[in-house]
Structure formats: C-alpha cells, structure tokens
Length: 235
Image 1 (cartoon, rainbow, N blue to C red):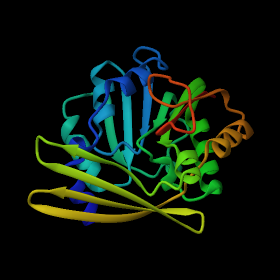
Image 2: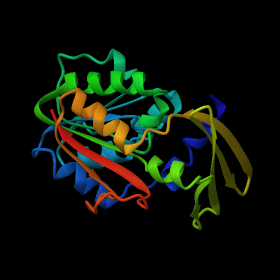
Image 3: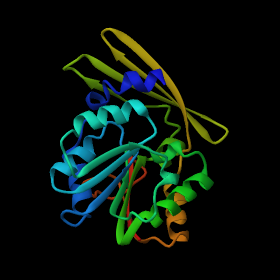
Image 4: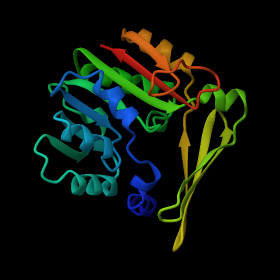
C-alpha cells in the first residue's frame, strides 16, 4: 500500500523509541530472554532490545515496514524480522515476553478477533511469560467524545502528523494526515475502541494472571484521564 510505503520513511520521526517503554519491557524480561514484537513497524524497539542482549523477533503485515526494520537491524544475529500474520505463528517457539504496543491491538476488529489474538499470544508465551499491551485509552475517547489526538510535530524536518477520530456503529474511523514540506499523505483505518473493562474481562476469561493496568510506562495508575492504557500480565 502506497501510504505505508511512504509513512515507513518517516515512522521513526513520528514515533521515536522512548526509554521508559524499553525499561518497562526489560524489567519484565529475564536478561538474554526471548521477546516477540507483534506489529513491530520499523523495528525501533526490537533493534534496541536486541542491542541490549535479548533475542528478538519482530513481525508486521507491512512489507515496507519490514524492509525498513531489516535495514536498521542489519548485523544483529539475535534479531529477526518477518512479514507474518500472528495467527500463523509457530506455537512450538515460545517467548519470555510478548509486547503489542503503539495501538496495534485495536486494528484487530471486534471482541471476537481480539480474544482470538490474546488466546494465540498465551500459547506463544513460556510458563510465567509476560504479555505487554499498549493502546490509546478508549475509556477517555468514548466518555469524553474525543475527536482528535494531539498533533505530533518534529521540528527537525518540519513534520506534522494529524490524528482525527469519528465513531460509527461502534467502531472508530481513524484519519491520519502526514504533512512534510514536499507532500501531504492521508489515510483512513477502522479501529475497535476496546475499553479497559472489556480487555480486563477477556484476559481473566483466558486465565492470564497478575493483570495490571497502568496509565503510563512509568507505571502511573490508570485513570479516565490517562492518554494510554498499558497492561502487563502473566501466563
């Protein structure tokens, strides 16, 4: 898709790797452990974790994102990227930690598909393995009728990334506009606005343990006003 081919060039300028996120993942993973990044995009976090000594696999459905990720991870023998559907992942290969961040989860449309995903991820975890999920806090979006997220700006290359929401039939139409000096790119994608109650009930149903929800990667308490929802749980 042309949009993903184009946005891959700017992805790291829009969503740079953040130390707090890395620390959150590392604190839940044994040194040198195996990690799976579901929806790895251009591989920023996977590359950083591999450089810290973890064995990491990153998967994504976008050819362009995987090409970029492989370029960034070149030479790291403990890092592998592939274009892959998570539902086809080999269950004989298990991980100490699986993370699905960057609001990837809502791209799985509806509670049934999300439950199938969480069930699959549990099968891919080692005993006591950790699952980490980050989404937008849709409790806030739905209750306060939020129709946009803060514009992301990168003054180094005069980049702006606009994000708008509209709710239709229980789903969100997520419209993005990437503005750089030489062009403007727009895209629309449908998302399922999963709430904290829905996902907590689902994780409990699937018998995940030690389920914790946070409002930031510094482990701040989750509140209605939190911008993200971050969940950590164990198999």
